[in-house]
Amino acid sequence: MYTQALDIPDPGREASLKAVPPPTDATQVAHQARFDARIDADGKIEPQDWMPEAYRKTLVRQISQHAHSEIIGMQPEGNWISRAPSLKRKAILLAKVQDEGGHGLYLYSAGETLGTSRDQMLDALHTGKAKYSSIFNYPTLTWADVGVIGWLVDGAAIMNQVPICRCSYGPYARAMIRICKEESFHQRQGFESLMAQMTGTPAQRAMVQDAVNRWWWPVLAMFGPPDADSPNSAQGMRWGIKRISNDDLRQKFVDATVPQARILGVTLPDPDLHWNEARQQHDYGAIDWDEFWATVNGNGPCNSERLATRVKAHNDGQWVRDAALAHARKQKQRTLKEAA
Ligand code: BYC
Image (cartoon, rainbow, N blue to C red; front, side, top):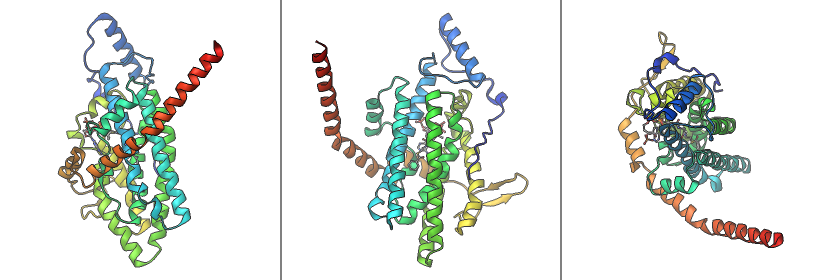
């Protein structure tokens, strides 16, 4: 359903941008030149390789935010597990939410290869310093929301994440390959669940339409600010971390989703959404960026609830971490005793 094609922008476009900050001595210059050559050749940077501090910092920022999004993203759907309408839907939802937790763990591991500990990343999340995707600060009011998250939120996530499979940082790129395969299943189960609801009663169809109306705009904003207002894009593209811009991904998503909405029989809530014959793409209406920034900055409908739930889960799990550490200490002592 989603293309694996990667329309990488014209390499000449960012040719004048170089990694920041500029190197300070001859050794640094040589390291930087090797790094730039590897990036220019579309090669991979691995954890043991020299890399500019700004590249490392950008990756820690993006990978940890991505991991946090997966972990916080378990909540909106997780609270429907006990209310799923059948055993089949419950089993699917359990597997999906568990997958999201797994994605968070692969991504924390990828982040750790850059020299930042999991505790540091979690601390940044729990103290509100780190960002996570704006989309998970919206409530799931009905069962249809769960299907819409699969169809639209996972659909947008795939669109954004497939290009990251070719990210210049090896551990992140490799983690994304497995994650994208699982996201693909998530997207299809969401579509299939909505299809079942759309062939149900008028009330069920209305419930799906209502969920689409509430999620459509936040999903479009999920791709990030317009390119002109995206401070990290140019450097991210130069480093091969980001392959396709926020606006280009958003456009690809709109173009892929319109025919799917038609098949489902739902209306996308945008009177300005039209096929533009000249551009061979859809035009769409204005996104409310004030709402996006308010949500990103902690003032969305569920920000405090999401963070409080996450911090409580972490604190409630302290005894498990303590027990695991105590067990590891005992094992070590036993091994030392046996060796003595
Ligand atoms: N929400 O310069 P920009 C999933 C921030 S979860 C919040 O364009 P960049 C799933 C941005 O961080 C998958 N903040 O930034 C799980 C930056 O602030 P900082 C989630 C956002 O990095 C459960 C500022 O705005 N996917 O699939 O070049 C159930 C300026 O932006 C958002 C990922 O995490 C946002 N939506 O591009 C179901 C993908 N957008 O950091 C599904 C990985 C922007 O400078 N991340 N900001 O303070 C990325 O691809 C990029 O980081 C972004 C932003 C496209 C998100």
